[in-house]
Image (cartoon, rainbow, N blue to C red):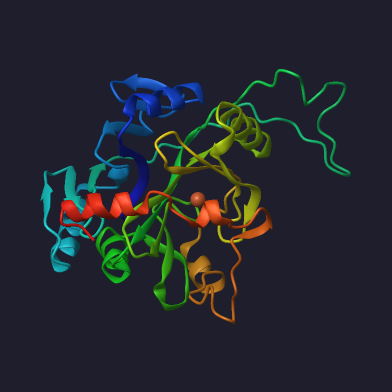
Length: 316
Ligand SMILES: [Fe+2]
């Protein structure tokens, strides 16, 4: 047994009130001071004030007290110090610097909420009623699904998340330049990729379906037309439908739906997982269809500010 849930993250930003207000307008609920959740999760994002935008904490659950002891032992073998009680473990990401908190707990499955009947050829499910309306009810994000982190020491980062914390590898790019990993059944709760400077590439919130992506994304763009980055499209790795946008603190985020789920680890590892994505044998475009990477997706406008803030803390 091992990590079994990716629960929530903490974002440190220069404008925490503005970011909190943004998420309250776009479907999260303020459940405590600086804490924003969904109807089924009391915490998804905690917002704190910081001198530059960065991920400052990740929070996981794990199956048992034995896992706490074994995780601490694995981290120790990597030279990463941790603080434990019988049911909790805390440590710091040795490259990016944010804190990690793990506590013993059971997975929190989501309840299906208001599935909308769809009409397909030969499979009609909605009769005598409209689907689209002038005032669609905007179904909010349900949970945090994953983060993508950029690491200036990809070998050390990969060892920390996969050998130390026990993430399972789903797919990997050639040369281990980027690795998709999971602690739940999602194709990925984490993607970590090589970069000159460490930073949060994006965080991703799961919504119900393609319409919910459209409704939520359109509302964010109505708020600020410059927030659009790329979308909609469907990823190749993970198969998730996506729309990428920028929050008012400058963080890229993703509304996603319909990701691949993996319940048979052995079968995935044997028959689906690849470690040569990006090589000539397995060229891997970002998208199966839809908008692909553009300048806004690939460039990080505030990268030098992030680099300088990290240098002040002695971080790469
Ligand atoms: Fe993503």
